[in-house]
Length: 299
Figure 1 (cartoon, rainbow, N blue to C red):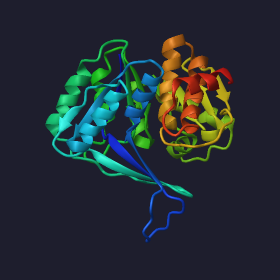
Figure 2: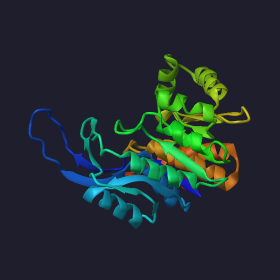
Figure 3: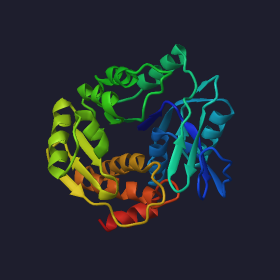
Figure 4: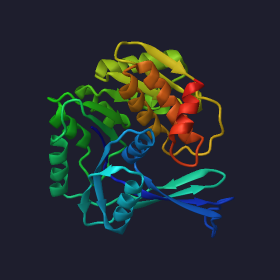
């Protein structure tokens, strides 16, 4: 079974405004509402590709109920823990520039954290767990470490899509896959990544720290992979019009999982990661199967 964990799910309320002016009344020409959260995005894209997963995390109030309702309508299997406070609503403004206003989210009690740990303890050998996104400041900053510590004696593929210390502190548990982008890779080592040789040098360092596979997203310039066998792969993104940048990185994770689970081949997993991330970037929301396969076949 594949599990995704989203500590702080949200409803994303998207306002389309022609020319946003700070300090003035702005009127939207169109509104959209989507579920948000990196683990949730992975689960939805996997479902679009015909792969079932189970969504773990916390939800609360009328916002949380709507999150569950929307996820269920996509066929996603939800195993969230209910909490008293409302889940968050994030505001995304699409104008001449994209602006995001992300809420902090609800407090989560120690009892609810322990309830999550009990669910985590039920994972079995050969399961996959995706830990994606930041830890809200209402939770202990070492949550990823606590989870990986509980699972270290099981044969579970753990994927970590996080930044800075959250990622670095996970590497001692030898995650199956990590997916920083180029800027995040530079921030980790306090350098500027200038070329493919830099990608290789610093990906090797992350492998030395414990990561098995290092996937670096490069936005419109594609991606780079250093796999556990020390093979490297580098491809540019397919050509297309950027419509939506939200969820493209999460879609890359979903595509990699899909490609690897289907073919047990890192090159195909890498190509699916690029095709799936690009399919989301070229869509109004998250990638769908036909578009993913179309882009994959042209890589």
